Image 1 (cartoon, rainbow, N blue to C red):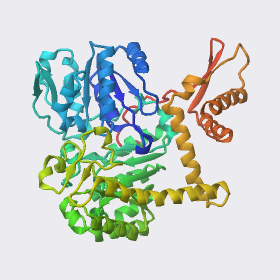
Image 2 (image 1 turned 180 degrees about the horizontal axis):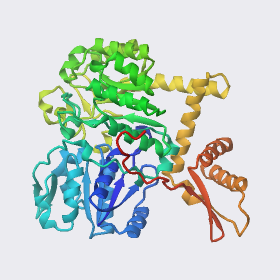
Image 3 (image 1 turned 30 degrees about the vertical axis):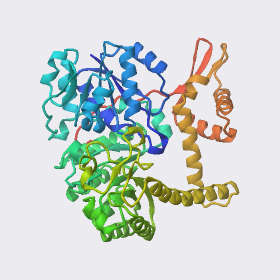
Length: 537
């Protein structure tokens, strides 16, 4: 059985890192015996024509995609296009959005045959042998489909209790060199589940209220595997990495015992931060943590069931300073009952912390308490256009705060931030920035240029040159590549030479001569991973 797993496009503003959900599902299909290919449109250009070429070359029996609400419309459209290209293939989708909007998804997108609901790894393993037998679908727990116009949801799939039974994410199926070039951290999870009940969060209902933990040795085995690909930065994406302090300590101690050197970050809650554990995290390579405080108004925090206090937020920042970690905080605007006064309080509180922080707009996603119990709150949902649910624009209003007012509040914040950024860029142009500021400016310029190279397939489409039997010459080959990319993009030649030269030195880009043509391309994945033995040093 052949399975194509689609990684749908993801905007640069949302930090497109190697997709964790896609690689977990791909690994589950592989473990069940399928031949799997990931069609990655996160770090390459998507077009219906390209999808057709890739599907016709692979001829999959199953085509599936995962998505979050923000990129769901694009992902669903790609799956429907795949169905039109290969009508005999079974098409499916999974992820949090379709889990909580299942019937609407199937009726709106008839090109999607079935949905995988909730945690998908055990479901797809059971589904794979009978995927071509529609009559057997009703016996597979955890899926939904239409049968003669009737919406069918099969039995609830129990959560996976032993996370050690899961194969490691199939990162070997990703275009690794592209992700290395882009430079975002690789995410891992060390647990699943969250006992908290924040009204704006889908996660608790996707992965359960009881936290299930991975073995610390297995976690560090996976870290070693990630590092073996050449990545050097990891993000621990758990909701609650510090919920079990002994286990968090064990992970850090194992990193140190094996002598692993890499930078990493983690998400934490301000009410469970522990100075001793945070100090150990710093020693083990963690350099920054992120936490959601959401509001500077105590009553608002109670209303959204955040279960933290403003004093805990201050203490969390102080702990970070004491142990040498960089803290990042996020706040929401447009929460239920939001007023100009609560926004002012949030801004004053955020400024008082004297750390890096940002704002997101409340997006009442399918499956969240705030959406399902909207009548209980001072809140009105303004649109169900899922493409607008990226938390970067208002989709709700309250009785005392319009969407235009919340937008103006964030615009004013971003105006000040942008002014500081433009000032920094100008000072960099004049050679007046600090070394740290210079790295920030150059890094952003490099990031935007790299994303364009990847998302527009510029290397593949423009970097094939007549060679006519000439001897190989690395300098000449690089010069051709740099010149062409400069011509196509219009960027400064020094920038193109700097970035492309670095990618060549690191092995992300490589050239080959075939049929008297020199073709540049992104390097193939060099490693086929396997689970290391526990405690492998």
